[in-house]
Image (cartoon, rainbow, N blue to C red; front, top):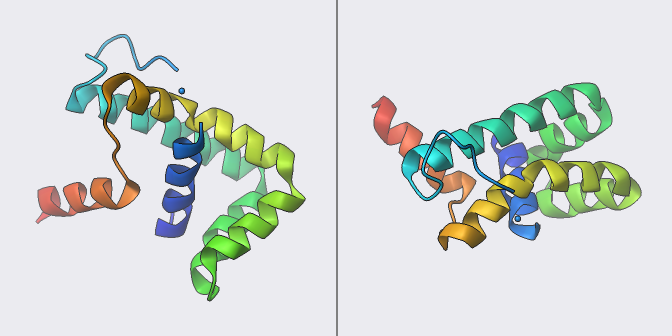
Length: 116
């Protein structure tokens, strides 16, 4: 998944609230990681099954106005927007429950730091 798609998923998560996985303390790094990985796996499967949405998110970064391009696609396809919003709901719930917000850029920076 390219960065624009991750940014969109992060934005979708910020719009929506589910229970984090039962195996991890919800407000811990492992709780966040488990919740995020579940959301991203579901989003990936959804995008594989919806090539129009996948293309819109994949190609958004090549447009001069990525946010506008994504907004235009999902305005024309509100059902897909609602589906992705529902998929992102556990991250929003975690944010509300724990009082923390983690952006895709922060997650990316963490993975970059750990991989160096």
